[in-house]
Image (tube, rainbow, N blue to C red; front, side, top):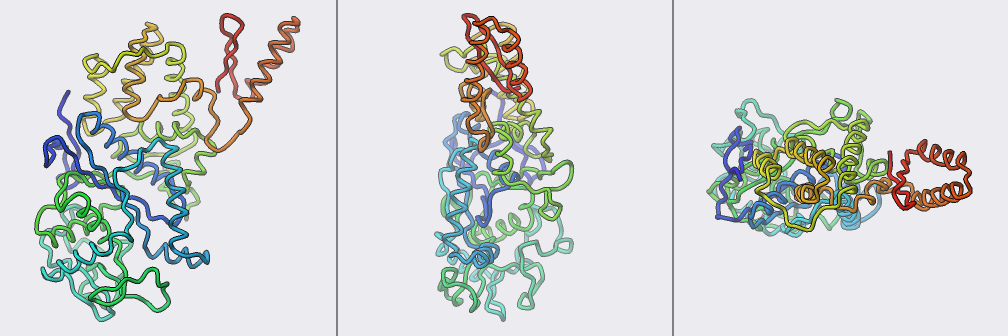
Length: 463
């Protein structure tokens, strides 16, 4: 196989991947803030880095994959107050929903899924180290802030000078800061806040700032210096920039070797936004599309490119998956193991090793499906199913996919179609071919295709 290359946002180029410890990969990905249902942008993060860890494992690496959960945050506190429920009730409900959505999309559980509230002592330890290193100060309002201008490397990840930078979306600008770019590490408690978001510290009662959470969880579970840190492009600044400043400022050593960022999701060529009314949760999408179709739609695009969401693109993804599943239905895969020396497998591996180039890898899968149809080769069918399985596709019995309804809709369809097939068979037995043709036509209008097989068997699939 070719050498794996990863586009490193910090270096702004593709670089050969060399792990810190031979044969081992330590990877951290910023997860969800659990105050609402996950949206299609969250789906992309989950699927993309699920793909990364799957390929790393398939390549023989021992992977430790950490994806955190932010369960304390201003938005969480506000939402719980609006709902009249405790923060723990709110976050647990949406963690359970997130787990359901991730499982539906074929996303494997990370090796560690730390919750921010479980790592407050580690956060306080980092803040203490930053204060001792002259990078943190307590302001007049009781908050503890990071002194950005005292960290020499600030701005490397975003590629901007300090003069170009502005306080980020989730940074509170207040009079207590020495500089508008400084960001909060520890927020002093307010009287109106619930007790469950107040922790004791040497600086008084308070709670952690958002940025310090990931630094503490990553360093505790993966060490102060690890291989890969990932997340959405929206986190590059300020969140990931601040993580570097915190972690390197406290530990006095490099933080991460490779930074990976997936591109934004757009809806009909516009940025996805609640204010534009083009904002879709995973659950809403799964009411109309099979979850594997959604996963395939995400994987067809390169992870660094923008992803344009539309029903038309999802329909196209469904049709493409249908073609591959149909090939496997007609030619069941052989039982032999995946052959990495076979030409299609080599090209698939080359694509994946080129910064996880899934568009090229998917093109190889289509070529295989076409060859399966032409040659009726069980060996090639095994290659198709085996390679697709590495990226979490084509692992269901073909008819299960071909007959599948969206994940949360159209209950009872299979029973209805079975009854119609039986009625059609009876009509044919009675030589009532007009009724038999009518049933076939009515099912086709509903998007159901009947396929008559030798021996009187009739199978069906979605159009």
